[in-house]
Image 1 (spheres, rainbow, N blue to C red):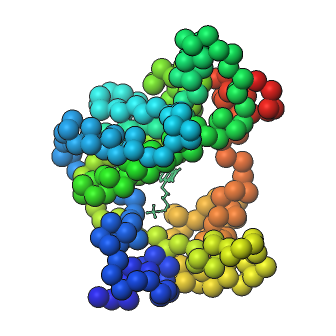
Image 2 (tube, rainbow, N blue to C red):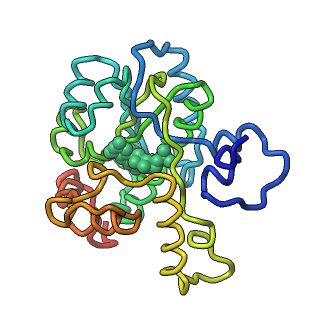
Image 3 (cartoon, protein in one colour):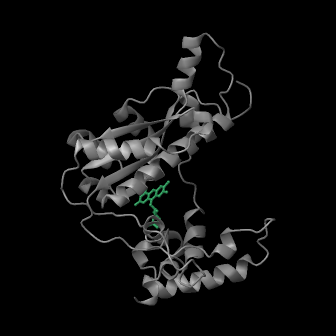
Length: 279
Ligand SMILES: Cc1cc2nc3c(=O)[nH]c(=O)nc-3n(C[C@H](O)[C@H](O)[C@H](O)COP(=O)(O)O)c2cc1C
C-alpha cells in the first residue's frame, strides 16, 4: 500500500489517527470521488428502484419530505439537458440523468387539501427543502457507489435554470438543486484532497485565527499532488495563467465574478419567497 492509498493520506495528503479496522462502508466513503465518463451499459429499473429507495431513506426535516426527483432516461430529454451545459460533455455519456429538486409545492397543495392556511413561504422553508433534496442526493450517490456505479452532480444546469425548468415542466414551488449523472464508470475518478480537519472542524468554539498558515500548507500539499493545469485555472482571461495556481487562488478567482445571478429571481417567479419571514 503506498502512502496515498492509506485512507486518511489519500483524502488529506497527511496521516491522521484512525481506528485500525475501518468498516468497508466508511473506507468506501474515504475513497469516494466523482466519475465523469460512463459506459453505455444499461441500468435496470430494479437497480434504479433500489437507488431511489436509498435516496428516500435520507433524513428529512420533520418528515415533511420537501423534495422531488426526476429520473431522465429518455435520450431526447437527456440530450436537451446535456445541451444546456456544453462545457461538460460527460453529461452526454451518462445513460441516466437524475435531477434533484427542492419541492415546497406538495405541502402547499396538502394545506389546500386539508383546508389549512399555508404560512411558511419563507427562507427557512426554502433551506429545509434544499437540505432535504441534497441529503437525498447524497444517499443516492452512496448507494450508487456501493453498486459500482459512478455519479457526478451538475449544478451547472442551474446556469440555464429557466430552460431546465421548461424541459422538466417544473411548476411553482419546485426548484432544481442539481442534476446527477449516473452510469457505470468508463474511467477512473480522481481522489480529491480535502482541507485538513484543523480548518474545517472547530472544537467547542469557532476559531479561524490560523487560517492563513493552514491554507498555505494545504495549498502546497494539493499542488504537490496535482498541479492545476492552465485549463483548470479559473478566469485566465482576466487573471492570466500561473505556474503554481493554488486551490485558494482558484477558489478566490472563481468567486470573484458573479455566478448564477438570476437564481433569486427564478425562485421569486416560482412563488418562493426568500425576502422576508412573511407568508
Ligand atoms: C452541489 C454540487 C454541484 C456540483 N456541480 C458540478 C458541475 O456542475 N459539474 C461537475 O463536473 N462537477 C460538479 N460537482 C462535482 C464537484 O466538482 C466535485 O464533487 C468536487 O470537485 C470534489 O471532487 P470529488 O467529489 O471527486 O471529491 C458538483 C458537486 C456538488 C456537491
